[in-house]
Amino acid sequence: MKKMKTSLAIALALSTGVGATVFAQNVKQDIITIALSGQEQVSVSDTTANNAGTFSAGPKYYKTGATKVTDQNIIQYIAFIKHGSATYYAHAGKNPQLVLVQGELTGFFNITPDLGGSATSATFETPDFDDNGELDGGFTTADGDTDTTIANSLDSTFVVLDSGRHMTNNPITGLFPVGNNQPWGQIFVQYYNSDDELECDNVTYYFALSVEECFDCFYMNSFISDATFKEVTGTQVGPPCCSVSTVIEGKGKDRYYLTLSFDNTYNNPYLDSDSSCWASDNGFDAPGGPVGSIPGDAIDPDALKYSDLIASGLGKPEPFEARFTLNGIMSYTWTLGYLNKSDIAPDFLGTGSYTANGYGFVGLICNLFTGTATFSEKMVKAGTCCEDFYNWYDWWYGIGAEYVDTEGGPETLYYIGTSTGATSGYPTPVNGATSLTYHENFNRGGYDVNTANFAPSAWPTPGVLTEPWDNFGPLPY
Image (cartoon, rainbow, N blue to C red):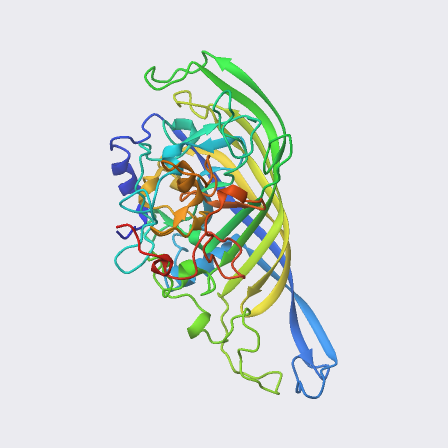
């Protein structure tokens, strides 16, 4: 099934449905702002004039220049590929925004087996591709919640404290570990259309996120934290059928090593219409690859035919073609408390600050970047942002999922680990089918089974297969 953009009118209709979050007056909105400063080559020349002469003459003059990339540029890069116009989201004199929907940035949370065991198919065994082999964003799930936020979760997400285990349940309490799922959520463009109506467009698959794990005897797994928690009893005034009598509140600051990438070219397998994991929600073919004006697209060496003239004129400008990867430390300062008095449970609210360095390929030129990204969380009125516009299982992309090859087709290692009679796979939710972020840098040992061919080397998150799913065996449906 094809998922469409969700407008405010549709959202209000959905909010009356069974299982909707009806108690919250306000919701957490998470706005992403990005500011990158770059250096790039602007001239290679055998005279003082820019890009003059020939390569065979041995160019003796080299010059670099500055460039900038912001979240508004990234929104244009997305709009150009997804809708055919870089200005698609620019309406009503209001700037569109990148937002993290149903987001969690802390390491002190985990997801339920029902949410982690969800599958993008009619069964719980294998990813969902429609009849044409296209990923459509729909999920089959036993999770009865319409959104995954902690504040009103009955069967999705929950606060956890350090359990003394890395991947398995605590043997005494049965509690899940910390630090295996952040950041969580989906990335949207939030914008106003020509009728001044708020619209939401899921653009998660333009990005790739990964977090480094490290296993020591503090059992924090992927993050460090200065935090204080306390148990609070009897302060919640929500519906007695849904509230809890004792909850955990607190405040703190988490830090973890995050890789964040963006790619709107054929190198991104979600955007390649010949890929079996093509996101069919995307309206236009991405640049690069077999149809780009510059063969090789900064990945394959010497794919452009040789021209001795430095200013060859062999290609055409592609100002909205972009790819970059950033590496750095995410610092998330938060408080844990009730966002509304009627909420089921406390949730985290704060600010994530990401300082990073990286590299890129923007407008057909290779770049080196330094910069920041800020994830600013604040409370806004329900129905005025993308946070509560749609049922999560109708429009979700698990770009952090980790699939392996099995005789019945590709499965996530978490699904394998929780299957009846499983002897391998992850026993608690890590890199499941709904994950935004791929957690890496650990020895899979007994968890691993026939690891499949994941993504190409230039795509940093191995959460998708580069070959058609049916190359790895017949699907079980």
